[in-house]
Each structure stands twice: as structure tokens, then as C-alpha cells.
Image (cartoon, rainbow, N blue to C red; front, side, top):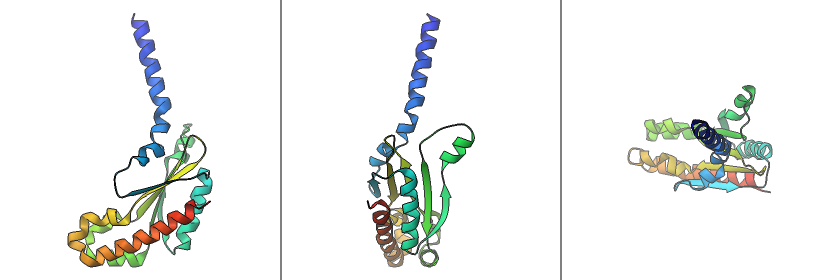
Length: 165
């Protein structure tokens, strides 16, 4: 009986672990709360990531940070779907936001996430800058609201260019 219980527990754990990559895919983000934009594409992960970087440059924004667990996991012998978070910002917005609401700068850079899906396609997701900076609206006033609106437009253009066929 103990052997059967141990076998069932082992199978349950194996099944749960095999589903973990799917749990971290776009399905999780597609149910994201208001303030997110999620764009599914037919592009492979590497192509969408390269297109995102080109689109950032095309909007005269800068890549400030870049992080992802995929390559580090591979160096440890683990295989997980491609996942990269790319932090994007520009100094003129930093200056405006610091002047309007210094604490709001904790939110910069604003991040895009590129996720590889099980079918070989990739998804792009990000939180709208206006949603990111909303908690600082009372302190930041019209200046922060204007900057966040401008960033919404820029981030939408980046996402549109990156995900275009």
C-alpha cells in the first residue's frame, strides 16, 4: 500500500512539474488584470525579441535592463521556454517623472516581457505606463499624467512594430 501511495505521489509531482512551463506562458498573462496589453504573435521567440529591440530603438527609447531565466537555466542543465524581460525608458522621461513624483521612479524602467509558447510562437506583454504610474498620480499631478500618456503612445508603437507580421 505504501508503495502504491508513493507511486501516485511521484506521478502527481511529475505531472505538476511537467505542466510548470505551460503555467508560465501567455495563458497566465492573458488573464492579466486591467492595465496590461498582451499580444500573441506567430513569430518565434528569438525573432520577436530581436524585433522588440529594433522597435525600441525605432522609437528613440533605450533598453535599460534585460533579464531572463532561460539561458541561466540552460547553463544548469534545465530547459524552460524562452522568457525575457526588457526594461525600456529614456532620460527625458526620467527627469520629468523625478520632478513630478520622485517615488514614481521606482517603477522605471517600464518592462516588456517576451514569452515563448509551447507551439513555438511568442507573446509580448507589458503593463501600460499610465497604469504603472497611476499610484503616484496625486503627487505627480498633470506633469506625471502627461508623461505617462506620452509613454503609453510610445509603448503602443513599440509593441505594434515588434509584433507586426
